[in-house]
Length: 367
Image (tube, rainbow, N blue to C red; front, side, top):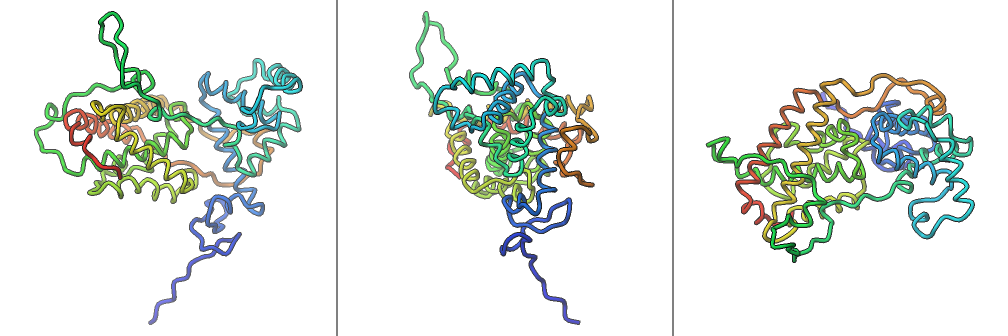
């Protein structure tokens, strides 16, 4: 019996072939812009609302400051670029003072409390931003530590040697023994490319979180594990290009990780800058710094998982009820405690490799 012809589903909102299916309503769509289509607003609004609620569950003082800045920009109706064009005028000063007074003493971790203290106009502006997906207009761009300008000539004070200035802006290095001290097995020739895969997943994640990845350690960990098949499943790569491209391909399978080709090009550039290092004489310092920050992130996530700090259930209130309700939720793949412990050991192994084989890593060509 002849088999039925295979047909490719079309996007519900345009003529392009469908790449994804909404997990809420099973609608076919081809891109994030079609996902946010006006006819699909119930699902997309609820998805973005959940991200905002979860992000608000654990925030640092710095994140609270950023939240107040964002709320102020929502009220004044200006983007980051507009805010940087000039000083606030008298009306802006009044708006800022009014907002600060209303939010004084409000727990910015509590989205319901923030929502109650927003005016009707502010709520409408916020909902409009959710519909359009324009949050990037309100959030200042993060300056990556590997983009810093490095002083090649270091001033010596009182004849005492000092650490290079670039180390102050980098994640702290996790000290590990050289690989030969923990194993006598000859390392695989795939390891340099595997490190590239981990670096690409790391850069994609920290760019996606706009530098706030440490404040969302569980979500950021889950993002890195989703993007890096080396860390998640022990995969190996035999060439640089595929190792760096793999996280981009993984991201296309997950709505919360998808980004533009321009974003992907930035990630490739960033990986190359990390490979180049701060100076010719210390080329692997950035590699070790990036792996070290992953190590810190994983340990923070491990602590949170051990304490079961991840919020569970869906809170109901004025903020929640202002968005359409759905029966399903879109979530990142949950990282388990045993999984995170295992990945920490993998990262420590890669760090030990970077210590012992720094010359081999320093000689790598751009992906």
